[in-house]
Structures are given as structure tokens and as C-alpha cells.
Amino acid sequence: MKKPLLYLAVALMADPAQAGVYAHWSFDTDLSDSSPNKRHGTLVDVGTAGNSGITSTAGDFKFGGGAMNFSAERDQVTIPLQSFASGRPYTIAFWAKKQSGDTGNLAQWDMVIGQRGTTNFFIGLGDTANATAFRWRSSSSEPERQADFAVPKDHLWHHYALVASGDTITLYFDGQLFGTAGAKKTGFAFDTIGDAYNNSANYALHGQLDELWVFDEALDAAAVGKLCLENDPGIPQA
Image (cartoon, one colour):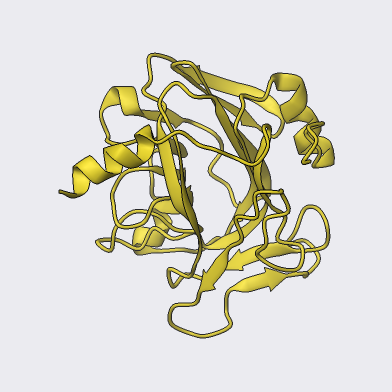
């Protein structure tokens, strides 16, 4: 019965309090969503207590004085379950810096956002042991529900913006158009930041994540570039 529930989650229409900015986690001082929709996060600290949380160390954030630091223990930030139906526009953008030196599962994937408890619905950054550098996956691994992009697999800060519009998935990398994938079923569901997938493997994010934005519209190239350079998409939050 799990699979029908997952498809149902994607089919539900998103209903934000205002159009444009769906959520914005700045991670400057806490896990709050600064948009009017108030989808605040809660840290689930697994293993060693206190080794994940907001960091203000120079070089470990991009904007605002803080970022979310994730350890390698499947620490995660839970958020209210949200979903976008296939064909509905959305944009998910963020800064990320992966930690170097990982081994095992952690050297395969660093999951940024997605739905825990399933092998589907995730945005993941491939690490050194992975042939794939960036993957978006909807409700299955079928070609029409997955897109891969060969971005650099280093351990530096990079800005990523994934845009869904119609049946097309577009990726912007460091403010520039990187690639597109067409003929896709673009539905997406997410309830976790910094982890995804089920308990069969530890693919949690190990590193820093900053300025995670979700929009219920497809940002154009100019807006993505502005977001990358200024952390401002030019869209009112109220």
C-alpha cells in the first residue's frame, strides 16, 4: 500500500499562502522558514549529539552569517510534507559544499532534499565514488521520472537551481544554465532536508547547506542569476 500513497502525495496540489516563494530556509541562526508559509524545520540529531547544526565559521556559509552543517550520521531536518504535481512549475535552489574524504555510502550520494522512507523523490549530489554528479528523481527510477546532470564533483561551494516547467527539468549551476531534460513526469514530494532514501543506505548530506529556496513557479535565467549572486530572486515574500 505504500506506493499508491506516494503517488497520491505527488498528485496533491500545493497550496502556499502566497505565490512565488514557497519556502526559504536561510540557516542564518536557526531552521525557520522565513516565508509567510512558515514551514519550519526540526533537527533530528542521530548518533553524536550536537555535531550537526547552524555554523557561523568563516568559509562554511555563503550568505547571512550562517549555514546548516550536517555530520555523517544521517542527521536531518524534518519539514512538513509538501508536494508538486507533475506538470506544475516549481524551482528548488540552494548552496551546498560537500565534505571531502567520505567512504562507503557517503562517497556515493549527498542527499539535499527529498522524502525519507522511500528510494524515490530526492535531489542528490554525487560524490567521488559515484558516476552521477547530480540527480533529480520523482516517483521512480524510470527514465521519464529521473534526470542526471554531469556537474563537477568537487568539494567547493556551488549554487544549484533545479527548475520544473511543463515536462522539462532544467538545472542551473553557479547561476548559469547547465542543461535540460525533456519528456519528464515532474512530480516531486519532500519532507526532509539533508537526507532522503530509505534505511538501506546512508546517503545523508555530509557538509554544509545554505540558503535553500523553494518556489512554486519556474524561475527564468535572470532570476536564477540574481538569486545566485545576491540571494534575492526579485520575488516578494509577502
